[in-house]
Image 1 (spheres, rainbow, N blue to C red):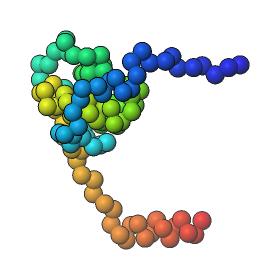
Image 2: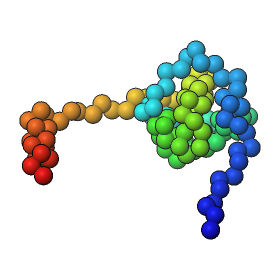
Image 3: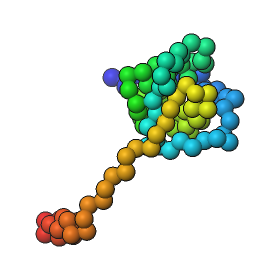
Image 4: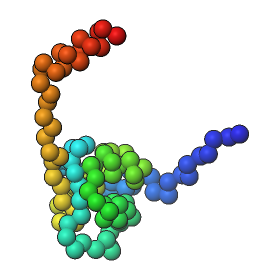
Length: 115
């Protein structure tokens, strides 16, 4: 039995990023991306339109957007930055996670060594 092949993309990855400028990129992998209020996806190119449609269900990290769209992260990063500059998307950094106490980490480490 042969494994199922994914269909070839109609638009190559480099075409999805065509015309996007890299001078204002401030998007990291964990940057949360969401659609600005009352934005219509009409008139956008196909990759941008797919991204906006994906984000209408709720915010996602830039890396998650790349996974859902089957595009490289670097392409989605440029796409998000361009749509943020146009006012279509908004971004925010994820909340900072607190580091566990050192004592707790030492207890876990000693427990792992005991195994």
